[in-house]
Image 1 (cartoon, one colour):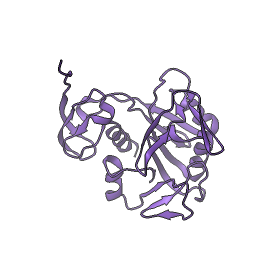
Image 2 (spheres, rainbow, N blue to C red):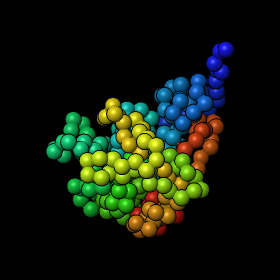
Image 3 (cartoon, rainbow, N blue to C red):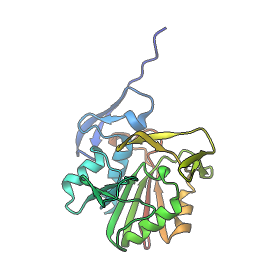
Length: 234
């Protein structure tokens, strides 16, 4: 018996390469496979670009594709960072070495901080949110892409670090990591209540954009964009 074949495509306009394009996927999981035929961006990246353009930069764990690549080439004040646990220098290659939970950066350093599929891999989310808030200028934005897998259910702590060991509360889960072939452990399964947590841990004003825009190639699961503003959100 042959395997069921899947193909989906839509003609539209890509908000990243800013041209007419075809969005296509050979896999039912659109979030990682529904690519722009011109720039190979995926839905969550197009959703982020859509929101960035509506709102109006320091980005955690970027990849050489989509929004990260566009910002790198078009924004003169854009810097990129990863967290290298075993390194002692402030810079590794072209990337700054920064732990979101314990940043060596000065207060009020940035207008905007971006994290794409990073926050589910942060052991202590409270510390990370408070540090991002500290390093943002007044009226600055923290823009987060993270899979809100639990939707209307409460956020669940999936695992925790105990010394050098990881203690799993549920089935071990890892996601891809651009600087580690072993991947990154998942510490949280978020719901929409992440907005309440962020507000409780800081003075952020938070709004979640849940987007489904076929003509912009924004379809599939977990394309929510969380926008946190330091100051009143208009």
